[in-house]
Image (cartoon, rainbow, N blue to C red):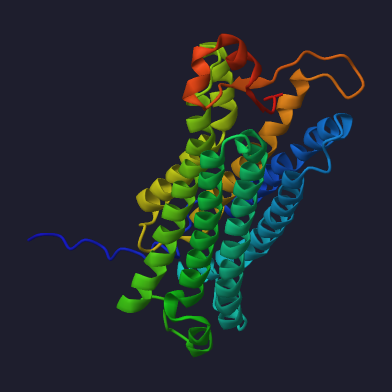
Length: 328
């Protein structure tokens, strides 16, 4: 007689990582994401670059990043209490329903804080790239298109999250013994939010990288210079990699269609910390430039005259270049 397999437990209630381990990891990554701001602020202060527009969005990103990590720390205490009761490790307690309600509210808040931090970093990178594109109207047009797409995807993600799992009105309809967001339509809207944010995140990262790389490809500079500039402008690739790893890990451990809050918190913290580092990395280019007031080499990258007729006159061609800001 075939042996009946034991019923599979709900992956949303299983404990995939120890409570203490997850707490320590979130705190550690929060410290890393905070410490990167110290050299960033010092370098910008030394080079008188604290007032540049991208700095505003780096600071905003950090505010949302820090708020998200604090929300996650408060969320984990309730999540583990609920898991302990569901797994029979601890007895039922009277605040259980309130904890369930708080977990859902905090999960929504964390989602918005997390993606707002990511989008602030994306905007800071676009503002960093903009001076390099001013000399080329066509490239500047693509920059504006990217900004519009960035705005549209954020609005899309915001609305899909707000309306997922039946929307806010469903929160007050959860009774004892009832599962939240398990219906067919509710699961569909939840997955639309998860996959929608993922697609928006990766596609915007890709656009932000392609924008300056198209400019570099057309520059009349050495291969070594192109490699250095390409490496600087491709920092968004790190965010793409962590975003993909995050979705893959959530799917492999708990199921993409039914993610576990602990696993979402773990990989969300990893991606958010990576985004903070990526947002600060362009500042470190200033280490290769002398502070204001000191004699420094001219690292301007010259773009060729776009008028085809100018190529017939070398003297005119050499004197009519569009100046593009230095990568340093």
